[in-house]
Image (cartoon, rainbow, N blue to C red; front, side, top):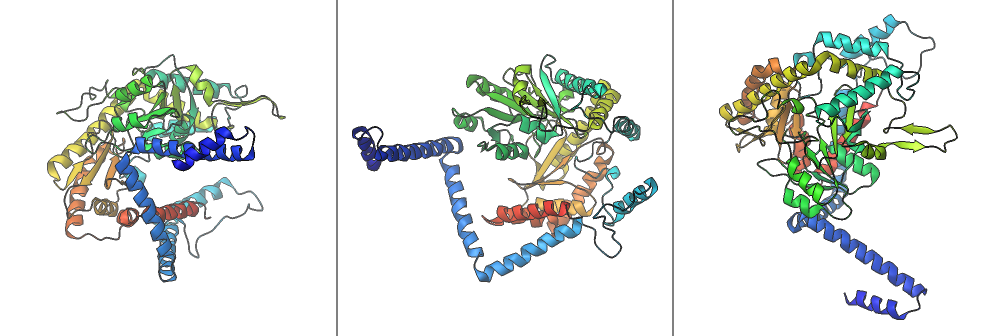
Length: 530
């Protein structure tokens, strides 16, 4: 502080435009700016959490230096390269029989040849999951064969349409506007405004925020990384799985642009206290975004289905939509290659638009990231919503949520080694282990051996299933397999499954997340290996 005081005195006595004066101003600016950043970080994270972050940063740096030593570097590189090769081998078909189409054919191919090649590609990796069997967590939102035919016909009818040209494709413009209107009414804001996007991630990025629960979707971090916005990721309560409201209040500062809550969140299917977040947002005059991408057409129907009150003190749904006064935007995913971002009013929506009246190619405007968009996806979404209708969505909500609650209740009552994370009100159920000899990731790997494709979670280690209409007929099979998987993980854990290997690596040391990040990058690279 004596140095700063000396600089301040020198600043007061020196000529106003001197070089030394400028240096002193720059020094004070750097010191004060960084002091403010540290102060805000400490206020948001707390002293204990901040100390843990500093310790983890130091430990990571030290371990990375150690791993660069020749005796360790070659071993680590060998193991990482083998892991990357394993990832590639699981995704990329190889062998003498595999035909790779790396350049355009000299002559165009017939439709028969094209579809025969698709048949070949479907089987090149050997046996793989058949989504129609229903052993999936989310991923496929299938409404039956008749609806599938409706979607295909809608796609075919508008396969070359582009909503960037509404004068050429007026039906697509009308369908898009009607989809947004139907969603606004579903979320109790018929006079609001919105647009369609390419998916839940783009909807979230369109309304990017700064203070989020640790259970919020990764797309918030993704958008903040793109736009260089600081994100305060705050912990959720270990029991309720809702964001810590005291931490949220402490994290709010003059730079805060918006708060985030989920209804429901992706990891464990619980929801934040949107009404309480709304009070904070209203008091500090900032926005509140509610991510309903996973709950989309289920959560709004819980009340009408008679399921919003829960059962036996569990699974109660809290207020979440535009009836909560502080909510300024909501993202809703159609899971048909499109999504909807909704705002309380049209004035807020204007900030999402991009308009350039000075471009040499003419006046340019687009409502979201994309310029040209596939109108066929909009037509398919509109067709699905018309086909399902209010009663169809209501029945889907009722059957899916009852299936999820049957899974949760059976785990609580019949599988003592596991427990349910929070009190999920809708379609997602996450379970973790409370038995010292049961690694829940081993359970996940054992379920994979039985054909199930579930999601692994971290902090705490857990596994979740997102129930869909495909799950409804598979509940008994899921529970029987889960009981067997728990028994297997308890008696004879393999220690070699994907969940144990990948997520175990992430928790193994301070550099674990960095190594997992390298493997995730290798996975993305493998997706584009022809």
